[in-house]
Length: 163
Image (cartoon, rainbow, N blue to C red; front, top):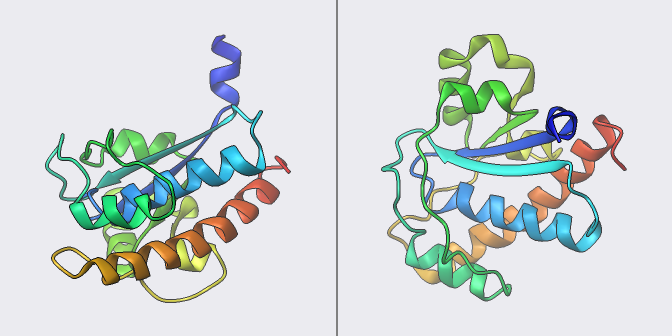
């Protein structure tokens, strides 16, 4: 059992409050892995927020946007990012360049595995924070996340010889 744990790879999604973007990215990544690789048990997907209030549920807009995709965020509880999570992660995918830069300041020894989600996925730009915006804004963010998460998972699997 202990040997299996050391072989696990962890993808960590990071945003500000862990109630919208990183929560949605985590759920989308988990669903994508379940669909493409249902037997795979060696990849963990986590999320956290740089300024999260621990224990908060996902925002109503995020819940609605993912329900449209058949994914429930009912069980999500926000978590405050810890240095230990960054150290444990195989890759850390931030929602914005600002998040990435803050991660690099607080965990400079982990710089080789810290990216924005968009750059890791081979795209560019930040994922805008939909907090307080319309359900349509959340749906647009969820659609963008879905596309980037899929591309990021493909890269992650290739880089780690897990295809």
